[in-house]
Length: 380
Ligand code: GLV
Ligand code: MN
Ligand code: MN
Image (cartoon, rainbow, N blue to C red; front, side):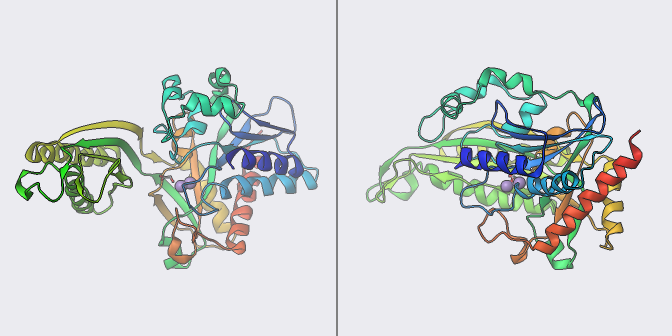
């Protein structure tokens, strides 16, 4: 499904009138619409085309299709801008199959660690095997690193994935900053034993240890007001109804508006994990699988979105992003700013009920076009 999606996007990019379209070594779909004159810089934009299991259809894809719609209009009007437009459909952002994540945007900033290729998915298939099977040229991944001097900056349109814009009845939101995050893949080990005969005070139940940690994470994150913490995966491998869990695999996802606040949350959660294990006679492993710094928007780029939203007659509403985005990676090498569109159904996301309206998406296309026109007047 992933490869078919990449093919489909690449064909639609050609239909839109992009001059060059390719699927690169890490699986990104890249379309380039050339500048008026050779040697002109490029505006980089896009979002991811992978998805969480049983997710919605807008998360990521919206940020690919909005700039594609803008390029289609430029092409139809036979119009070139003083800068080129490079739209990237990032191959992997969600961190579903392997521990490593941001594989697509990471490759563009030279942050693809070859050691990741040995990571295995749930079926024991390594990332290397999966990429080779997909026909990707792994050796070429380092060549994908972009030279920031050749770009104006990075912008990304994304569905909000939360309730804020919906509750305020405002169609667009200008992102001020993306929360910092850290993820761990963990294992708690105790002793599997008979559920009928092991007295309650002699158990070393790995799953109950994780349950206790989950309650702590909930309490500790809430204490900050704007931090969030989630144990999204919790498994008892080969568990049975009549066996005290001897092993429990779980994940940790911690986020906060600043790196310092995230670090304090992380310190407390890891300390509590150690204390729970000690008290319950359990062992544990916690492997960090991702760490992304908070990414404040570049002021000049945030202002371009604000001017665009204002010009459409939409109230200019500024908000932070609780979700992670490819923009966090590009942030490490070039200025970036994001625009959110309102979600329906209470803004739910990572759920098939995720939705938005054609009108709101059109406003995103119009705001994007406005930013292109602003850049055209600014760019010599
Ligand atoms: C991506 O959707 C994330 O924020 O986890
Ligand atoms: Mn997502
Ligand atoms: Mn997303």
